[in-house]
Structures are given as structure tokens and as C-alpha cells.
Amino acid sequence: MKTLLVDKKSGDSIKVKIKDLIIGGSEKIIISGPCSVENYETMHNIAAQLKKMGVNMLRGGAFKPRTSPYDFQGLQHEGLKILKNVGDEVNLPIVTEIMDPREIENSLDYTDMIQVGSRNMYNYSLLKELGAMKVPVLLKRGMSATLSEWLMAAEYILSMGNENVVLCERGIRTFESFTRNTLDLNSVAVIKQKYRLPVIVDPSHGTGIRELVPSMSMASIAAGADGLIIESHINPDNSLSDARQTISIESLNKIVEGVKILQSAL
Ligand code: PEP
Ligand code: MN
Image 1 (cartoon, rainbow, N blue to C red):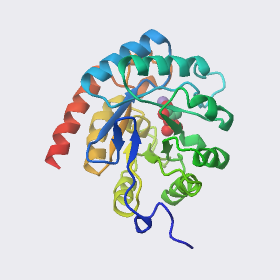
Image 2: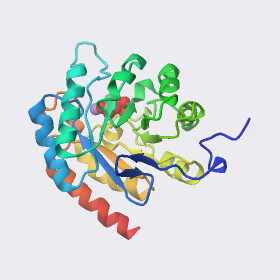
Image 3: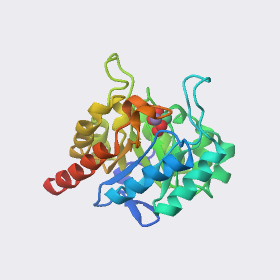
Image 4: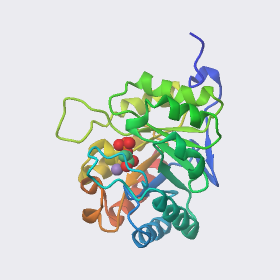
């Protein structure tokens, strides 16, 4: 087989530029925000606090891939508009999940980066569509995907001409059921050694338990991750989705400070 575009042998390490931000450079970047965009006021309150503490990018789901069709599905287009307004107001770039290839075109006016969620990592139509554009893509690992399958999903996007791909380790399903997923930090070390793409870690979905998020954030940075994506909320217990793994603003602030200290130590 030909050398894959994701292999280090194929070229320099990829740095993904989003406005003034570079993912995969010397700075560890922190993306945070609620699991779902809930309403303008909550989103704005959260974003203002994140900006103040030096978070680099804002997250929030408008189209939510919920396991049950009866759970909150996200505010959809209304959610995209809220995110865009809030991002502009606090001056933070945005990442949000798009599930349907038909929504990509419209979403480009609202988001700076498109998240491909764990459940859609194998959606090759979506990957090809994103590959034909220049939009930065945050490619989450499928919950049952091997490292090779995940890298091949990235290869789909690169081979269509879009090199603006950031991988995101978010934990995998194993026999362990104490935590929501098993956060595979081996993948981070392997990717940094052998592949060209930046990789960030999502310790929120990786653990499913907010008390574990600070320690796994530090472990991720120590393993070589280029950054973190963390679910946070001004009132975590009232989050409309993923409340149990969502951390408070105060807890996030400690992680942001911890990452700075760890980065200088490394
Ligand atoms: C999310 O980021 O809220 C999400 C649904 O993540 P994942 O696709 O990793 O489950
Ligand atoms: Mn979530």
C-alpha cells in the first residue's frame, strides 16, 4: 500500500490554523463549553468566563447525537446562531458537531471548525464532503474504532485535499464499566510518534465522571496531547446533556492553570 498521508514519512507535522489559533504548535490549546447550546444567556455567561480565564476556543452542540430519540436533540439551527453570536461577542472561535452532510454548507457561516462525533467517524459520505472543503475538522475517535480505523477516517479527509484535521481521543468501549469509556492515552503517544496530525483529548466523554476530568486532563498533556476539549457549565448539574461529566467554571480554571505549569515543566 502507498504511504498514507497521515504518516510522518509523507511530510511535516500538520498545524491547523483557526483564526489566530494554531493547533499542533508549541501552545497547548483548551477548548471548552457546555455539551449542548441551551439558550443565549447561559451560553453567553459561560463563554464570558471562559474567555476571561484564557480558554482558546468555544464548544457547544446544536445538533446532538443522543442515544435516545426522546432526549434533548439540541436547538439545531437556532443553536448555531446563538453560538455564532456568542463567539463573536466574546471573540472566541467555535467548534460544533455536524452530523448530516446536507448541513455542512449552511454551518460554514456559523462555525470555525466542524466536529465529526464519535458516532459518525465511520460516516464516509460526511468525511468525503468535509475533505472537499478547507474547513478545519475535529475528528473524534469512534467509540469502538481501532487506531487504524480512526487514522483511515482522517485519511479520507486528507486524501480529498483537506489537511486541516485535528484528531480527538474521547475514550473507547471496553469491558470496564465503572467509567463511561476507557480513555486510551496510548493512542496519543502513538500519534505523536508516528503520525502528522495534531491530537487533543476529551477527558469528559473519556471518563463520564466530572471528578476524574482534572487528573485525566493532566495525564493527557503529559502523554503529549496538543490540547484538551472539556465540557463545562456555570451550573453543571443543570446541564441539559452530559451533566455528570460536566465540570464547573472554577474546576476548569484550575485545569487551565495546571496545564500551564505542566507545559513549562515538560
Ligand atoms: C460531544 O462532544 O458532546 C459528543 C457527543 O461527543 P462524542 O461524539 O465523543 O460522544
Ligand atoms: Mn457531550
